Image (tube, rainbow, N blue to C red; front, top):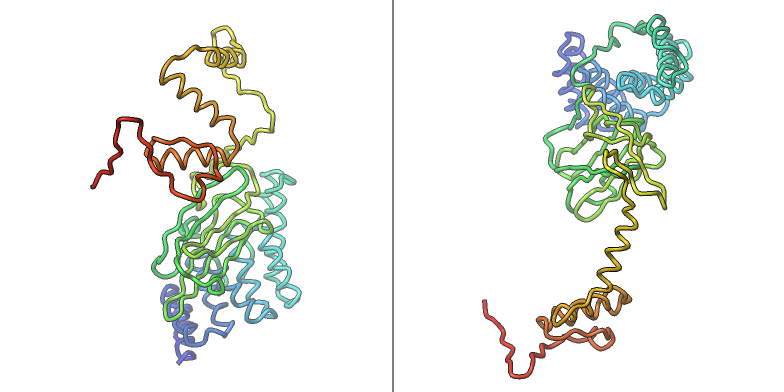
Amino acid sequence: MASDLEARAKEAFIDDHFELSVELYTQAIALSPKKAELYIDRAQANIKLGHYTEAVADANKAIELDPSNSKAYLRKGTACLKLEEYQTAKVALETGSAMASGDSRFSSLIKECEKLIAEEMGDLPQESVEETVQEPVLPTNNVVHVSDQLHQATVEAKPKFRHEFYQKPEEVVVTIFAKGIPAENVAVEFGEQILSVTINLPGEDTYRFQTRLFGKIIREKCKFLVLSTKIEIRLAKAELITWTSLEFKKDNRITQSISVPASGSQRPSYPSSKPKRDWDKIEAEVKKEEKDEKLDGDAALNKFFRDIYKDADEDTRRAMQKSFVESNGTVLSTNWKEVGTKKVEGSPPDGMELKKWEI
C-alpha cells in the first residue's frame, strides 16, 4: 500500500501537482514512518511549494533515519539557503558533498552560500555580490521556486495548542499551552533562524509548529522545558534588537537596538529649554520634609506603622500582614513566631463588638 502511494506521489510530482504529491507522501509516511526516502521526496515537493521550513523538518527526519543519504543533506541545504540560513545550509551541503563527491550540485550551492555569507558579514561589497552570484544549475527535479509563503509560519495539521511570546533584552520566551504532554513526546529543534516544535500524541495526528523567526538566535544557548500545563522555550537572541513579532516578515524588519543599562548608571537626561534641575537634590529635600513633618492622630499612627514595616525584616513583615488581614484590621503583630502557627483572631476596641458578615 505504501509503495502504491509513493508511486502515485512521484507521478503527481512529475505532473507538477506538488500539493497532491505532498499529500500522497504524507499518507505513505503514515504507513512506513521509518523510510527515509519518503521524507526526502516530500521535502523536494515542499521546496517546490515554497514550504521551506517543512522541507527542513523532512530533511532532518531523513538524516535521523539514514545519516549516510546525501540527498537528505541536499534538500536541507537547498531549503536553508532559501530561508537565508546560509551557515546551516553550508554545513549541510558540505556534509552531503563528502558523501557524493561527483555531484556538482553541492559545489555550486556551497559557492553560493560562501558568497552570501561574505555579503552578510560585510566582507564583499553589495554590487560585487550581485554581479557574481548566480542561481545554481540544478536538474529539472531540483529547481526551486520562491513563494510568498517563505515568510509565513507553517503549522502541519490544524493547530491544537495556543502559543504566545514575550521578550527580554537578551532572549525571547515562547510558550505553547499544551497541557499534560509527556516530555518524551516533545521534540524542539533550533536553527540559525528557525524554531521547530513537534508533539507526538498517541492516537492523534502529530502536531508541528515551525516558523522562521524574526531574528537570528544562538542555538547553543537556546533551551526548552516541558511543564504540566505548557512548553516553555527560551531563544537566545544573536542580536540585541526588539522583535516586533515572533515570525519573520520582510516588510516589518525593524532592527531597534535594546539598550541594557549598566549597574550604577546615571539618570537619563532629556532635552529641555528650561534651566537644568538637580532632581537628586529635590528628591532628597522632599524625603527630608516627609521625615520632619509633624503629624497628629491617625496620620501619625499610620506613619509610625509604615516606618516599622519599611525597616522590618521579612519575618516581621509577614507577621504584620498576616495578623492585620486575619483579624480584620484589629490586630497588628510583629512577632512571626507567635502568629505564624495559628490564626489571629479579631480583637475589637473596648465597647465595640466584632461581627462576621454572612454573604
